[in-house]
Length: 288
Image (cartoon, rainbow, N blue to C red; front, side, top):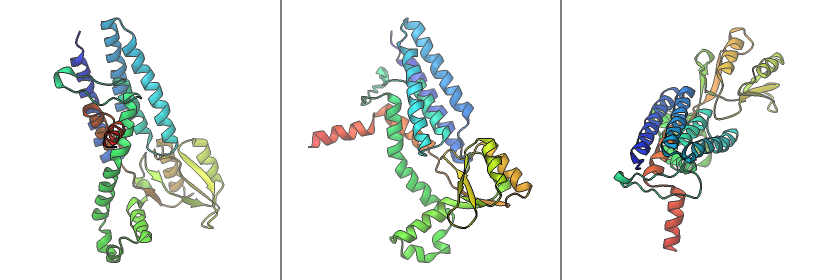
């Protein structure tokens, strides 16, 4: 039996969900958890149907194993602050729908397969293609914020490392009213003196962590501890502390880079061409 049509449906659904996730990430700076959960559920159900039709457990088993392994690896990279929790969930959902290499006969899609699971090819591709996305993103912010217009000296000394660092820092950080703080925002170092704030933050057990200050701006400071930004509970806690006068009315946050479009691009490349690293290695060997 030819299952290319079912595989094609899985691909189309996954791409559509990735497009929706990218739109959410660009507009709202986060990927809805429900979006990823629905995609993962579709992956389990569609592969279960394939197993029932063929009386072969390999489809649902591969889906489940791919989901667990991908979640474990991407969660570890999340802990290393490489990306947000929404990206972890999206990678896991993709792995659940498409656990192995693809062969779509009537579309002549035979991508270069790697020695590791398909989802890892998506991860590798996403990381590699994220660099041009990042350059475009930072360039857009620099133009939008009119940094060179306000500081023309930066344009003349663009190749100066220190000035380049200042441009990037001023572009990727901004101060906002705490009332405008949102879930997923990445909070920069916020200095304070009151020890009671430490208890409040520890009670929430969210994505904020308190550190002892060594710069003299305050005895302590708190900040986001991962690229996933603050949780909803963190957000409400900061707003309550501000409203009650424990902290001020403004807070500094990082402008996070929306990584989901890179995931979408990495998925497209993995489907139609394969693993970029494997392709590069193969071509390098042929050249040498």
